[in-house]
Length: 452
Ligand SMILES: Nc1ncnc2c1ncn2[C@@H]1O[C@H](COP(=O)(O)OP(=O)(O)OP(=O)(O)O)[C@@H](O)[C@H]1O
Ligand SMILES: [Mg+2]
Image 1 (tube, helix red, strand yellow):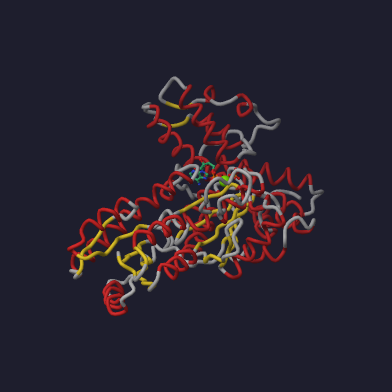
Image 2 (image 1 turned 45 degrees about the horizontal axis):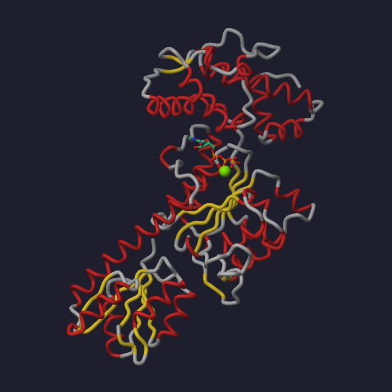
């Protein structure tokens, strides 16, 4: 996470400079304000983490300024500075929302400790608010199985995306692991200590999407009974994951485009621009290009989002991932159910390898979970799998198959033959259906000796 943003609110220029220099020497980014008004302006337009506020600001009271700042940004932490003789001011300030106080003349050693403590608390609060708003915390980068060469390629793209702040567009069928990819990018990026927030666009009506994204002033729409902090604000210095971006309405597409272009956005019902320090990762399981052709998705937004493009292939095109995924899910659910399961029988694995998994990894995960819960023995058997998986295809593949490689080969041969038949022998068309390049298809046809 980039260093915290601190605002020094102090009317005495000398004192202000002293505090600023001191904090800057610790590596913090420091803003200054001489008046309550200037302080509020700064808080409105910058995601300030910590405000150090003098109790006496000319005519104004520091406590009032703190209250106003907290109303602007409830995630902010404030420290009040007061003369030792007026310690009761500190008590009042803390009642009004300050987190800590320090006395003048400032002992900078103590001051730095207080600032650190306040920022630590700030980080915790942010995490708590992040946990609250992120729908599911069950994905984690280390639980990401990438055994196939196609997923290795995805892994390389994740690593590259993590090095930059560029916008990423992840595409892939449902259940292929787009969430996991987004989270992995965040976790590997320099924003990893910042929040990761997700917004699932189709799950919300349009006005709510807008206020969820950009925040809303009190009374800006029916039901807005208090100010709402949007995800662009809450995800500051972190990553915002926009899931199913294809479902974003056209007017919100314009607003999102503006944030991506100028880094500025507005709370609903406010004309004050706010700055965004957020990395955007968008995902879609719909064909954005055809939505674009149908003028349902703006081309300019598409190109803005698609700076780094990651396509997660469907599971049926990377069957090598099935065995390690099965293994991983057996361990995961075995641990949860406190059942020790050694593995899968060959018949069961072979049935799994045959199945096309329209629901991709999510479907596989559900199947394994169910099998672990319902299974009786120490191995997952064919009986533990749902009926539709047990059904044998018309033509048994690769009879006499022994190893996993053999099984996969048998499967590939069958799928290629099928695709070629459907495409009337036109290789380019068959390659498209299979999701591989024509060159790769020609190569496989050659090594497997398939007749076209
Ligand atoms: N490579 C993988 N390794 C381990 N678990 C995976 C992998 N890919 C997907 N999963 C698991 O499968 C489930 C579905 O993945 P995820 O939610 O990331 O898919 P998605 O592409 O975002 O789906 P949707 O389009 O429905 O939003 C999750 O529980 C996820 O943890
Ligand atoms: Mg998803």
